[in-house]
Image 1 (cartoon, rainbow, N blue to C red):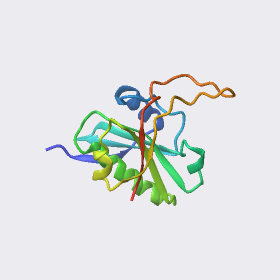
Image 2 (tube, rainbow, N blue to C red; image 1 turned 45 degrees about the vertical axis):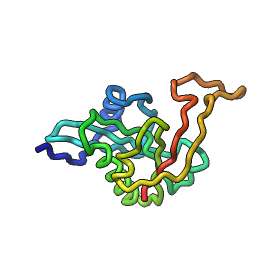
Image 3 (cartoon, rainbow, N blue to C red; image 1 turned 30 degrees about the horizontal axis):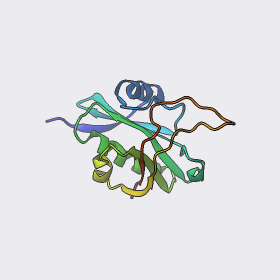
Length: 149
């Protein structure tokens, strides 16, 4: 039987894991902290937690799971979300959020006790005349905002 355990991980190693395993995002440029989950001492998943991407939520008391990735090991992702919330609370923050895309079930989040708090419609992109941005392939996708309970 495989034993899962939460393990510390550096930002660099977490980003390397995200590069290899995340389905649709590149690694982020920064973080507050990162966590790993190991199965019998082999890294099988990571969560990277940072300041909220949306300015509206960046109030000094809220963090966001900005990346979560696993190699498919059962229960690893829900373990990461639970550990991220415990660590967030231990650091004095009061809220932890994350997003899923409409094609993702959210079962790992529900298993960790998270709840959907908002539905975000698809956007055509983040480009504006004053700030052009490159397409990352995540445009035109409905998202759901989740909050740790």
